[in-house]
Figure 1: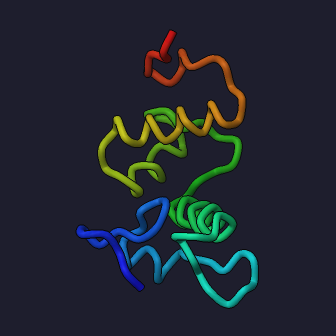
Figure 2 (figure 1 turned 180 degrees about the vertical axis):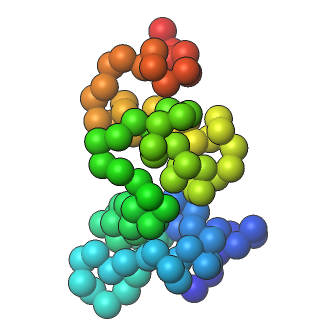
Length: 105
């Protein structure tokens, strides 16, 4: 296994300890591949968030139940809010006013 210069591994930049604790082989090929296998990456990321208390359907903004789980990924509040805003955009949410982040116009 090889990480980047700071030790992070894969598309969602797991630290080695997070890889050992949360990485999963979602497609059943016998490998937990966080570099090349999108299914493993997404399942491992979901497992990480779940491990830190993520509650499906709950809010993600500062003060909401899921915000502390995002802060476990990265302690910077702007990073955590950016992750959640991106997830909302992928999901198709158009109202970003509650996020506290101004969406591009």
